Image 1 (cartoon, one colour):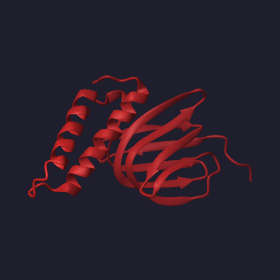
Image 2 (cartoon, helix red, strand yellow; image 1 turned 180 degrees about the vertical axis):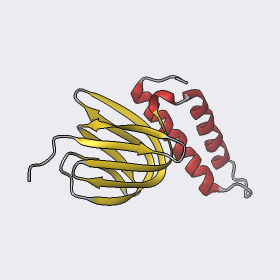
Image 3 (tube, helix red, strand yellow; image 1 turned 60 degrees about the horizontal axis):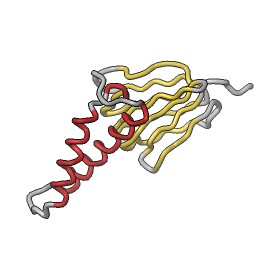
Image 4 (cartoon, helix red, strand yellow; image 1 turned 120 degrees about the vertical axis):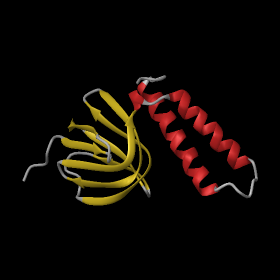
Length: 142
């Protein structure tokens, strides 16, 4: 059996389908680190972490910010079921920078009433959104 030359990628959140299409390669933030997928990849299931999904198609690439969920990899298909996510071109960078600053301030405060785990996750989410948006050239696109 011949290896496929492309991958069908679907990125889905509970609210909407973020992307569905044919791509050449995919990079996904699994909970244990980033996973690169090319056509013909061995099947696997993994937990999705906080980070950036990117795909390549020809000489262009697209980026998404995503948080938590699961992914299924098959030789010709990758399905990402994310708790939340957004296309880099739709990220409000100013809002993400404000969320980052708030989380950093709370983490530095030493206030015993602060949920530090929650603030660390908020910080990681904000950083992920800022990085993804930076790769798309977005400053804010509704």
